[in-house]
Image (tube, rainbow, N blue to C red; front, side, top):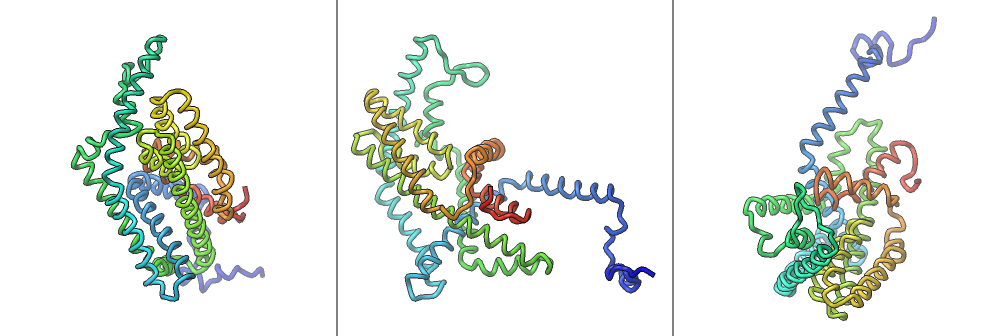
Length: 358
């Protein structure tokens, strides 16, 4: 008489320990899986904005945790003290930046907006003389002021809508709270996740989560270093060349470098337009210096800093940015790269391959 599997012995059947899926038809099982996947996708779609804000908070938590761990190797104090020092330094840098450069940046922003509008008018007039018109919505012609507002919003209208401003402030506040509390004690949240996982899958899932967190931290540290290096280098170069709004242009170029590949091209557009007010020769100099800085960043700085981070092919990164931008706007483009990095780690590990395999 053949022996029954341990899971299908009469005692297990009597106590209801045999999975219902053992006798469930394959078609019905696939239908249930499809309904579950569809419901998950629909729920994610409906709550996408909140999920992105939560992910942004986790990015901040990863950055705070990385800085805290680095400080633990330097100072002979506990994690709580190191975390408090890191938060104090970050808050102090923000306050000093606002107090020292806030007024200057606002002035340069206003001047830069005027220069951009003026240069776009000149470019539009030259194109009109050649019989070329810039298409706009509903077949009309987009105005120079509209183009300037896309490249650099008018400072007078940044907080024109109270509801929008309050909504943005609420999102930022939510991200800050999530980042602070998760960064304060990430082990507690990891232990909470562990308690929710089945025992058989617990080790694998936690191993993947740890690898995702490590990848995210390395990527973030590299991006912060890159942003500071690129932004400072471009600002100093533009100041030396006498370009209007050099500080704001450098700040924009550095922040846009957070977006791989696409950010470098976007940051070059307002720089080239503003430099055109000083002549074609200045445009050539500015573009040459900008390209030189980006080449140094792409081939020297980033590979040295992120050599152990998951590498994403340029076409994959750009495709993800286009998809996220279409679905969720600017915040989707900004979070596309880190989200793609952690998703790639999870997919590669669950498929049984290492994350550094192409």
